[in-house]
Image 1 (cartoon, rainbow, N blue to C red):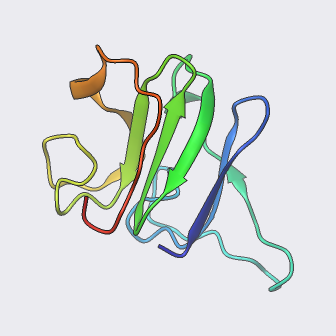
Image 2: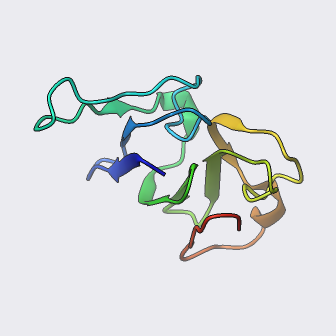
Length: 116
């Protein structure tokens, strides 16, 4: 989805690229694009985005993003028009939102696609 998401050793999540559907998790629909093609511009998702959870893995799909915490909790954000974020809604999410439906299960991995 023309965006990049990375997870640092300390659990920080950073994003850059196209943010038209909120998939950068920055609380808006703005894009964070490189000023020069050789130097991408990354911005950290705010501390409130994941609460007290330490993020171990991140995932990027078409216009959507997800993160997996060390406790096995899943957070999703971005385009939700096909209910692909798992929040029982077709709303876009501008910031990471925990998947409440899976909160009682320790998740070990996630896969994202175009409309699922």
